[in-house]
Length: 285
Image 1 (cartoon, helix red, strand yellow):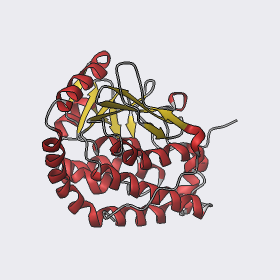
Image 2 (cartoon, rainbow, N blue to C red; image 1 turned 135 degrees about the horizontal axis):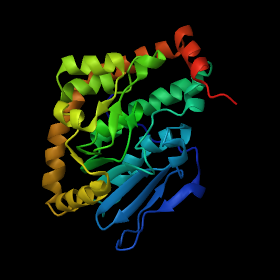
Image 3 (cartoon, rainbow, N blue to C red; image 1 turned 60 degrees about the vertical axis):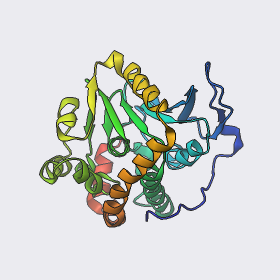
Image 4 (cartoon, rainbow, N blue to C red; image 1 turned 45 degrees about the horizontal axis):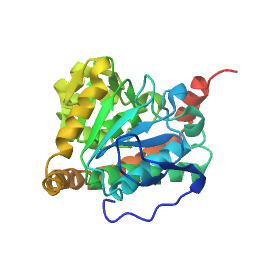
């Protein structure tokens, strides 16, 4: 599971190449990504923005692919030293896009691809050598929550919250939550929030160890940039080597739990209960 990655499959083509150059940056790196995920540069800092604000940054097929493949592209950017992950608009990420996840019960190919990419997202984030700061500008739900807590530092707006509501839609919390949260907080609290799907406020997330600290909403990106530049100025091999050691513990702990989680989640994707819940939640009109 956490061995050498397979070569990426690129379904979107070169028309979606975006330059990572912004004012003040000398980087000439390019990123082959769909417009749902945008990479910009400020000096040695790369800002990765989930970019579906009108859909509350819900994850569709293109964005899911991008989240699985962006990490190798960032690793190839030789001038990058630190990454900030954030969301456009008022939400970090609202979880899976309804139209996309509704395909999974009846479309085995789409279901398999989502699970393969889901495992790849976790694997690539653990393997990624540079420090990653999550700047949670709003709700981080489901997959969005689990991507956030896989980051090395999690800064949360005081108005943001975490939630993993897989169970409320009839799914096993298999894409990281049940496997990863017990490494960050005690298992009793993990059980409470994963089994109920309840929201976790920013202050409670810090108390539990699921976030590093909170900031006023209008200071979030400023604080993230201060920390990013501080990390970028440190000796890069020392930073990256220290992260590598820390993530060895994570990789070892997840080696069995993550594959089991995806197997169990796939099983619940095909249940009548899950399909009935999707029908009830389907937007009208």
